[in-house]
Image (cartoon, rainbow, N blue to C red):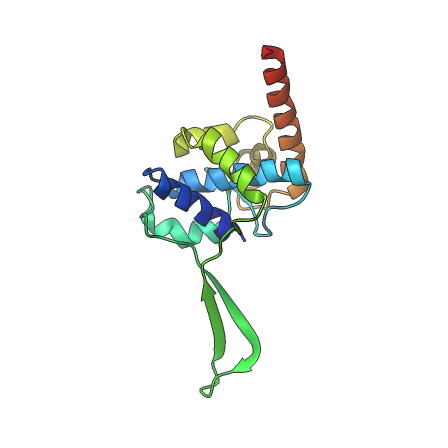
Length: 178
């Protein structure tokens, strides 16, 4: 769930006594998705990533935190997930729902990738990260297409392909400095 990744970064911000806006959180989660796609060859979560005016957005996260506007998300905020329990009815005829706070398991190797993203990209503002994801040739750029693709899903394959190349260039830069 994208909410688990969002909660992970909110927790990191709280630990580091810093704050996150919805915009910055969106970009950190998106970048983490791209790095995970490169290293694990699979999706970090199944929620849609769409091309919006201000970059790659995960609507499942955005809508839950949009009421904070451009203000920092409060330190006690957590993303939740609501799941309807099927084939069960209450005496009143209403469906039963479970509400929980998704988390990344502490034993998960996802933590290493999320920590890498936090350490490398937390120093940037949400707007700087937005600009980074708006570069020519990014998956957002290809799908958004000057507004013609607004709200369209950015395909996993496009994100993976971009981050495969991006990380290959990073590794080459590191090797060239040796």
